[in-house]
Length: 94
Image (cartoon, rainbow, N blue to C red; front, side, top):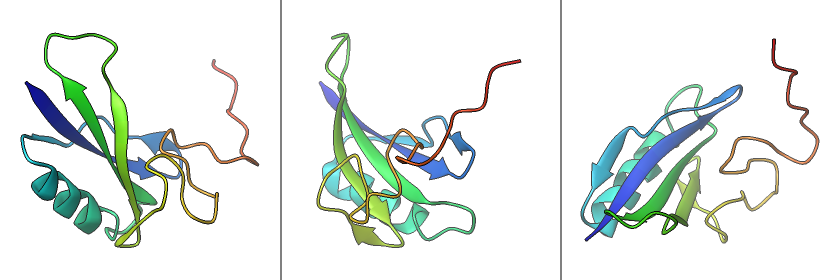
């Protein structure tokens, strides 16, 4: 069984999964709407297979309500599904 998880990318964090769907159309519609929320850079959709480790794959990334060409990076290359763009530095852990 495959499921689709939706999460938000915010300026200083990647949120945990907000919701899990069985159907791609529902997951993408939620990520699309989520991407337009205040403080959200992008909404991402990831596919998982239940009880099968290592099957995670990026499906879609939405920025300001627009589906991006690649499922893990914005069209302008400024927002990545993992939250870090090419010019950002990860702060040191304390």
